[in-house]
Image 1 (cartoon, rainbow, N blue to C red):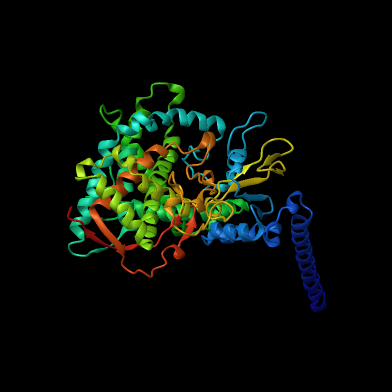
Image 2: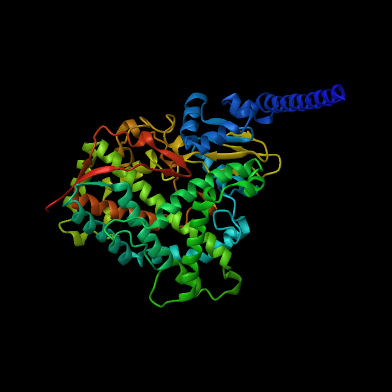
Length: 505
């Protein structure tokens, strides 16, 4: 009996070993095929990344993916294979080829696996929507983002710009060193809450205090990226029953509070003389265009994250790179302080005349774009299509990584240096061949960012106010703030400690 039992155990072990060996051979064969025989094998790139998606996913979860893609472009060239079925481009022509509309071919579709999976009770928002639904949502939201509508936000923008200056002047009397990453977040979250829901998060008027929702959004976005990677391998649904509630808490909290914000605003209904986004939505009498509660919830999250985090990111990066380049800081301060004789002259319209300051912001968007990622599209034309002169098979994922394309040597001279002069009409000869058209932080085509005009108005007014009212420098001039960044669709920024001195003008 003992011998029989031992024989059964040995047979079981042999069966397991055989299965493990078969699995190993299958995985190895998969990798060899994709690395050397797949239709994309003619494109350069690291072979391990071409064979398996695991390196892509791990670097994504670690917040290093945009940096790795730049590294690959510098090693392999303007087209790089970064996963078994995915290519990254740096050529400016690839923008329209990948994301734009062209006669004779269908619109390339968004990759559903590039986004956080929807949660129960939430519908696909404007980011996730297919073409038909996206067109409907743009039609509904469009009136809130027209040039006229943005002009009507002038008083609100000025209110928060002035409040930022007032609160900073008060706190620097006790402590001149402040975390400007936090202060810009306070401002843009308050502004976005007011713009979207007609109610601020009251970070600024509490003297610079994080609303719990701000931290919840940070954690929720990071967790969403991890969920996205799990969903790619089809294991998120399998793991959900055993995932601790504490792991999912940031995302659940973000979703729950967004629901509460939306429900509260819908309950108030249309309010005359208010210009928040929901007022435009609630004014809509066309039943076909009425958004359902799940649609409102998902789009509410989009409004908060896209409307606040991106602008705060850009302003923080602008401040850092100006501090790292004192001669650029002095030049832009001089422009602002000589153009305006008093604070009241700084308005949403007048700041558009600040030629050098606009160049500073353009350079900040190049060297530190609000998102460093590529937003992949699936090549949808049957048989494939040409992208920037390269034929790409159908169903290939293609994208332009902002961080990589904007710092690629073939696109810009001295790409890692902060040089606003490259954006001036009379740019130095060294920069006249820069491919400035590759910088598209708001994307292109039918899915270009609706909030572009509002974002420009915000960043210009806030930066002009800061430059007019304060001298500033890094608390630690040797700090490598940029080197500590991580990218989770939006950047995970560390504290940016800046020494502020109010200017007596």
